[in-house]
Length: 231
Image (cartoon, rainbow, N blue to C red):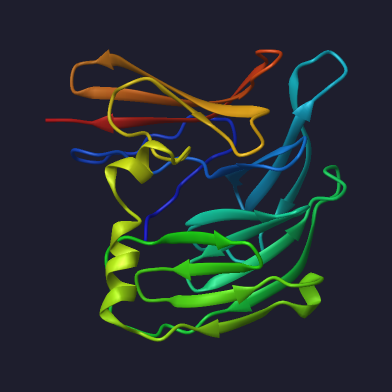
């Protein structure tokens, strides 16, 4: 799985050779977008919505239980599901000003390391397909009733996991800077989108900026900046 390093709305300098580190994970609920931010001692999920002046503003924040790299976010109604390596944490964003942790799981590492990885939402089921973790999360009822089970390790499961990391999937991933090309990634609710811009502030450096944008009003919020070093 991939490493994520975010510092709130401030500049992050990722000194990678040939490819940048991955940027802020972000997902949309009905009227709120949620993105990750990291400051000293707190790897957080922040809720963003339009304020009375039609500007995007942070409404609330919650520090995640684990400090591990956040690989993927998914949603189930008002809940945001965070996959942090072998851990799954569920946060309730019914009140965006006071999001809270309501359930967590620690998954088994069930097979040797594979490439690829991601989350597949299948209605009441969420498949957590990682490099060493393959599990199914049953999401029927309230989070207190959710259950996790390991998936059978098969060649088909390995192929499915590896195929999740393709050029097409990367283009649809709002946390993937995908080279130096500017692009727009609509989020699920269609109320928000992530806009990527790239500049070359100096020789050998590509600067990637990741913005959250309200599609109707055009209000924009910078959520991450990172530098990619190139040969």
